[in-house]
Image 1 (cartoon, rainbow, N blue to C red):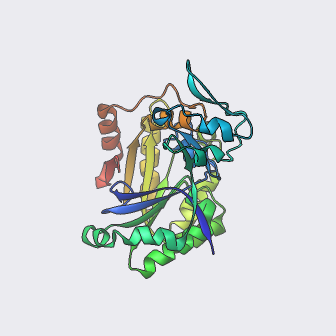
Image 2 (image 1 turned 60 degrees about the vertical axis):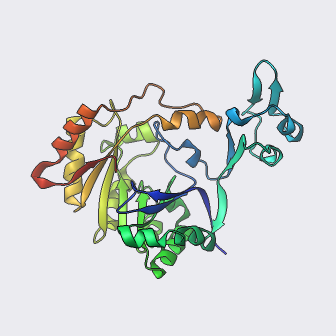
Length: 300
């Protein structure tokens, strides 16, 4: 039975497509965006996530760690030596206070659908449905396609939120089961794209032009001050959206949510100097892209 690695299922979501939705977040991503708001989504395997505020200092985690990666002292409290941790997750089983958690679990389509169908009335009444996001959902294309087909069999609207960085045949398999594609654009300059994400944008743009034809399409761009908020880039992204007949362009303001999460999984936040865009900047960029009556939204 096909299983998918999922790190969150968010109910009553209103920012990932039309209406009230359930967003299924798949774990694993080929991009390493400096500003990533969900760094726990990047690794394609379950890993340890630490919440120190809930630690009582009982020491159970220290006793079970086979690599001596966990220590506790009165002066500094609990410490994880991440260079020793191999994410065996024995410490999670030993912790009864919820201060050590597993990020990522294997689920079958049936298990996910059980959660999805609990809110079926909300989808019908609001014009909502299910959105599969990530990480990068296309890394687990077989599972995602099976999940989206199961949603359609129940009459549930389907959406895919994707970076577009995927082999074409895998993307085709998923998009064939999708009613709406939410396609992320980080930057149109290939060098700047690689600089901030670790990959080029050639495959991404090819998939946008070849796979999104005939599909309902929204383009989404994170607004990262000092990186992609120039007038030139905004105009180019708006022109791209029109050329692929996107219904709208969504500008998503950068936020610092990834900073605390990075610390919880033992990683250094890669964008420490980042600042959220001001309301004035977002308003100016929105007006700049809204030429000829094209729909541009902020935040969804």
